[in-house]
Image (tube, rainbow, N blue to C red; front, side, top):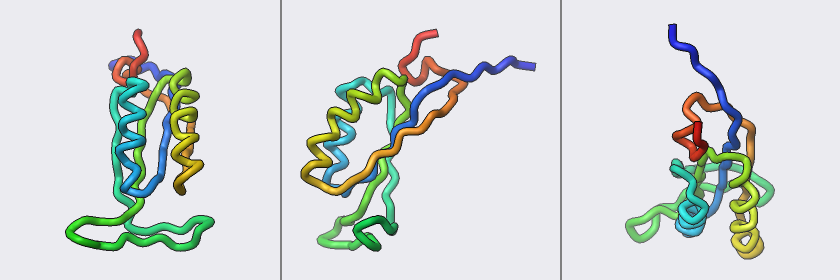
Length: 110
């Protein structure tokens, strides 16, 4: 049997308008997150009420969730980078404790 160890990391989820996706992904690239996943959100409800995607001009105007897993020391640079975005645009960020089996995949040496 293979012995698997788990290592503490932080999962960051950012929900923004699709128009702001590149701001978030550029920030994650700058802080050298090793990867991220983008999920288009077709509908949801928050303090601003119900939000639904609208198909316009061949594209989609929607919310998107960008998810990444990073070492704890990268959370503050992400927060700092998103302060300006959130002061001018709607959006939300969630940070959770997670455990990963291959920490080298997430920027943490063995």
